[in-house]
Image (cartoon, rainbow, N blue to C red; front, side, top):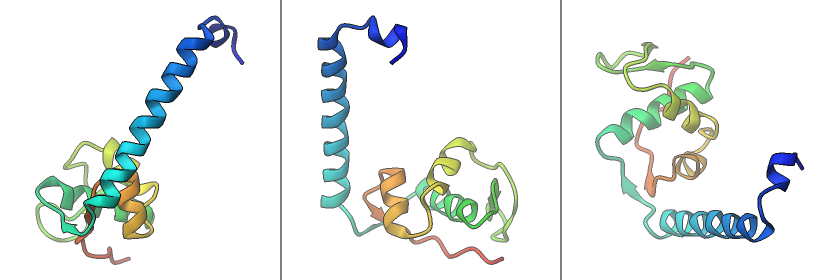
Length: 109
């Protein structure tokens, strides 16, 4: 444990852990209860960019032409985060904390 972390009172560390734990449970429950709805708006693009990243095409998109190409049309950090777990639609929902099922097409190589 670092000296800086050790300087934080135990009560505050436990409180922080409890807050993070409750937030995680709420997020997982929300995804579990509201799954199955189609993606809307930017969610479609982010899910597609995450799937492209998971297949080795980091910072690729199909926007605006509908053809996969290198692009940073959207902010790159969120698609990179979603791409960490985008091998399946369930993991995409978990990583993106989206309660919806992905409707983005599978990227072609």
